[in-house]
Amino acid sequence: MRPFQFHTPKTTEEAFEMATSKTAYLAGGTNQVDLMKKHIATPDSVINLKNVSTNTIKTTNDGIRLGAGSTNSEVANHPEILQKYPLLSKAILAGASPQIRNMATTGGNLLQRTRCPYFYDTALPCNKRNPGSGCGALKGNQRMSAIIGYSSKCVAVHPSDFCVALVALDAEVETTQSDGTSKTTTFEDFHRLPGENPEKDTNLPENALITSVFVPNNAFGNNIAYVKIRERDSYAFALISVAAALEIRNGTIKAARLASGGVAHKPWRWKNAENYLKNKSATRKNIEAAAKLASSEAEPLAHNSFKIGLLEGAIITALSQAADNTLETKW
Amino acid sequence: MKDQPSLPKTFSRRFFIKSSSAFAALAVIPNSVKAFYNHIKEIFVPKKEILPLSLRINEKPYSLDVDSRSTLLDLLREILQLTGTKKGCDHGQCGACTVHVNGKRVLSCLTLAATLPETEVTTIEGLAKGDELHPMQEAFLEHDGFQCGYCTPGQIMSAVACVKEGRTTSVGEIKEFMSGNICRCGAYNGITNAIQSVAK
Image (tube, rainbow over all chains, first blue to last red; front, side):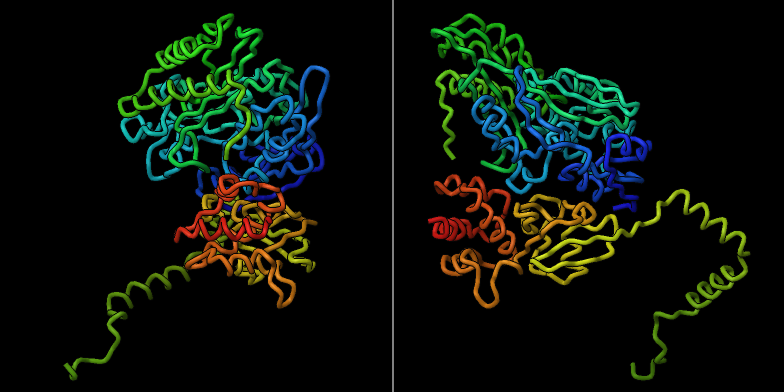
C-alpha cells in the first residue's frame, strides 16, 4: 500500500472538511483495502466512516431504512427483513462469505468496484482503472463480461448480489453532498452505464456520502426468489444472477419484478418481461415466454453467448420458485 | 585452477570505478540540491503515518504505535509475533487469516489495524484455556480436520463462529457457512464432522 493519512472523524461535517480530491472513504474495507493493496486505489488520505455512518435498521410506515453502516450480516439476519423483505436476505446470503458479510456495509456494497480481471491486473489495459488505456476484455476473456448496456470503452459488470435485490424492490438511495445538502435517488439511477466514462461507476458526486438505503413496502410476501449461477456453489461472483418477486392474487400476477446481476455495468431490470407477466397467470408457459423476452434483449459479446442460455434458464428457475413460494432455503 | 587469483570476482575493476565515482559525485552535490529533492519528495510522496492504537487481544490490553497501512494480520504476525493467524492470499479470498473482532469472525487481512481502537480481538492463540484446548480444537484433532494445517487456525476460528451463529443444522448449511475458508488439502469432510460433533 502507498502511505496515506488516516482520519476517523466524529461527524459527517468533519468528514467533509477532511476530504480532498485524493480521499478514499473507508467503511467495511473488504473491497477498498484490497484495491489499495493492489495499487488500484492510491488515496492520499483515508477517512474511516465508523463514527459517521449509522448501522441502524429502522422500520417506518412506508418501508424500511438501512443505515449506510449496517453490515451485510446485520441486514440479512434482521427479523423485519426476514419477515417482510426476504429477497434482500436471500441475495445477501448468496454473496461473499460470512467473514466478509460481517465486515461489508450497505453503503460500501453499492460502491464496490467491478471484479473484471482486466480491472484487477495492473499490467493490462483497462479504461475503468486507467482511462484511455483501452479495454482488455473487449477482445479478451469475456466470461465475466457484460451482455447488455456495455460500450466500446468497457464491458465490465457490477458484482453485487444485494444491489440486484435492491433494484428489484424499487429501493432509494439517500446521499449527503459535501455542501451538506441531502438528496434521494432511485436505485436505478444510482449506478450508471459505462458509455464514454467507465471510470465512473455511479452518479454520486465527488466526496458525497451515502447515508441510507430505503426499501418501500411491497406486497410480494414470500413469492420471491434469488437464483445465482457461478463457477462454484458458494463464495464466487455471479456469472448470472436473477432476483424475482411476484405479487400473486387468485392465481394472477398483479405485479412482477425481475432483475439480474452479472449482465451489465449496473444492476439490471428486465422491465419488458415484468410488464409481460402483469395480469397473466403464473404458468410455466408464461414464465418461459417472459424469460425468452428478457434474454432476447441481451446482445452477447463474441465470447460470452453462453450467458444467454444461462440467463434464460435462471429466469425460468427464479420465476418458478417465486410462483411456487418455495422460500425455504435448502443449503 | 588452484593458481587462480583469490580476489572475489564480484568486485571487478569496472564495478569499483563505477561505484566510487558515483559516491564521489554524490558527495559534491550541493546541500541545496538535496534539500530541494527532499522538498519535492514531501510534496509528491505522502509520508507514512504512525498512529497510536490501544486494543485488547486475547484478553490482554495492548498500547501500540502502528503504520496507518498496517492490517490487523500484519500487526498480529509481524509486530506481536502471534503467528498462529496465517497469511494465505492476503486478499480476502481464502479465510486463513480469520479472527474474531468483538466476537464476530472477520478477515484480518482486509482489516486496517487503525480501525480497531478499543476493540476485543480473539485469535487462535486465545481459544485454549491454559493447557486445556477449546472443544473445537479437540474436535479438529479427533476428526482429522486438516492435513497440512495451514488453513486450520482460520478454519477453527470460523468454525467456532459458525456454531455460535447457529448455522449447523445440516451438512449443507455447515458447508455453505464455512465456504469462506478454503482448504487446499481438501479436509472438508473432517472439518464438517468436527463442527457437527461440537454443535451437538
